[in-house]
Image 1 (tube, one colour):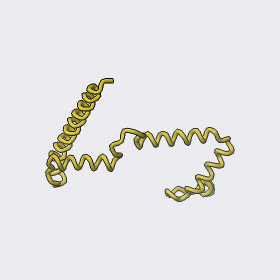
Image 2 (tube, helix red, strand yellow):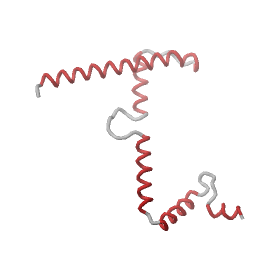
Image 3 (tube, one colour):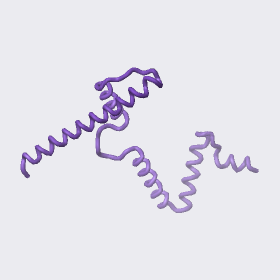
Image 4 (cartoon, helix red, strand yellow):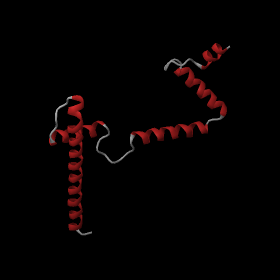
Length: 122
């Protein structure tokens, strides 16, 4: 491939990335300056403060990486993996697993154990 072709692509990418970031910062700054000072009596932000706020929010909510899956996708993958494991169990193993989980989690969220519920119903 031609070296100038890749150089042009890189320059184009940097230009559009900077343009996108500038638009995102201006949109965030406009929304902040429109809402936050009136509602919460917060200060008005300039461009550089808003850029810092956008960068900080990206760091705190997931970083800048493109790889990997987001939080919701990881949750779905965990649920799928648990379903596959449960399908591999025999019915007796499934019931034993459920009983163990009930005994471990009894009272943790204010729910009584299965035996206590059965006794109180009698």
